[in-house]
Amino acid sequence: MAAGLRRFTRAVASTSPEPGSRPAERCELCGVEIGEPHGHVVALDDRSLRCACRACRLLFEAPGAGGGRFRAVPDRYLTDPAHPLTDADWDLLGIPVTSAFLFVNSDLARVIACYPSPAGATECLLDLGAWAELARSHPLLAAPAADVEAVYVTRTGDALEVFLIPIDACYALVGEIRLRWRGVDGGESVREAVSGFDDDLRSRSRPLR
Amino acid sequence: MTAADATELVAVRVERLLGQLHSGPDPRAGEVAEELVCCLVQLYGDGLQRIVALVGPEQSAQLCADPLVESLLLVHDLHPADAETRIGRALESVRSRTGEVDYLGIDEAGVVRLRLRAAGHGCRSSVQPVRQLLEATVRQAAPESTGVEVEVPAPEAPLLQVSLRPGMDRPSALAGAGSTGPGRA
Image (tube, rainbow over all chains, first blue to last red; front, top):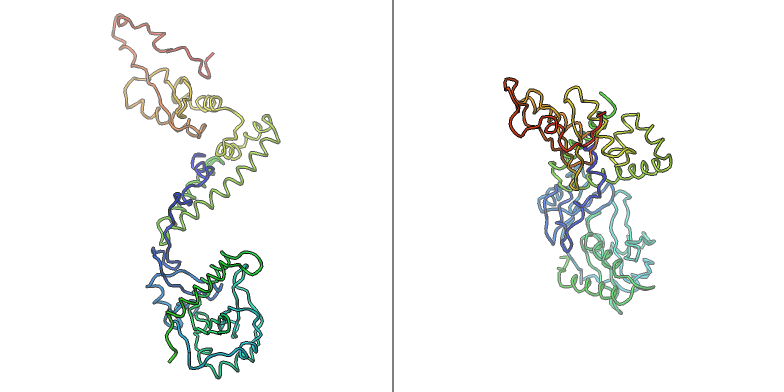
């Protein structure tokens, strides 16, 4: 009877969480509840990051799993103190900002350079030739796995630091910066976020070899 | 199948589809789908509300001649006739199967009260199908109601009795509080 559809005429309360509670995070691949921290899988078709449980991450570590359209994001953090990047090297790339990450987009078969901004991850022009040249003499630059890892470069004062980090860490930073951005240059809160991020990388990273 | 039945079939189908999602691997899917259905139903409900307001009560009543339109207006509490009128009409349509029924009103909780005038042959089992029919009839005519209660009078005195039971004045016992139900002259 008409009563059947009536319940939909009332506003739905079920998807609004109780005040103060946070909805449980779930693996976006299999639905199981996951806690923090958790890993991610890159869905190549829409270039999105999906929260993943351990089992699903393991599943997609194998190359070609999921028809090759899903790739688990690894969790390695590397530096290469043996091959530091100089300011001159950096200037060759033509990247205008102090923090950026570069990764290979396998569908476009080239390196993409992005930086965090109030609008999210913003692509910037990259001198691909200069990058290829640099990668020949700096093994860390060629080491990231396509789509799931990135080279993260950060300039603090005079120092230019380079890390190999998981792509989900890059986007976590992007998200954090976007949330905190105030004014023209982001403000103190953004500087704090970047500085905290960089500190964390320094403590986690192992040398490349 | 009438057009009003079509609305019911849609409701059943929607519930079945939602059930599939609720019992599937991702419980969020069911919740999201519930919200999706609400979103669309409320949009069309708002649209119908504006149409009813624009055309006015007389034309709305004419539109209700179409059973599908009527059932949709009922879903959204937009029917131009009030509950008593609708219930009265519905009771009229089943009178041949139920006998005379008095409409006693609808309380604050939304419960509709009816009274059967004659208990038929008086036994409980013959009253039960009548009771069920009345409940279904009222729920369909007034889906905003939350329940139906049917008062059944005490069975008539057996024909063999020579005199009436003391204190039992037959006409008033059956007519009750003298409410003016529909169909009564």
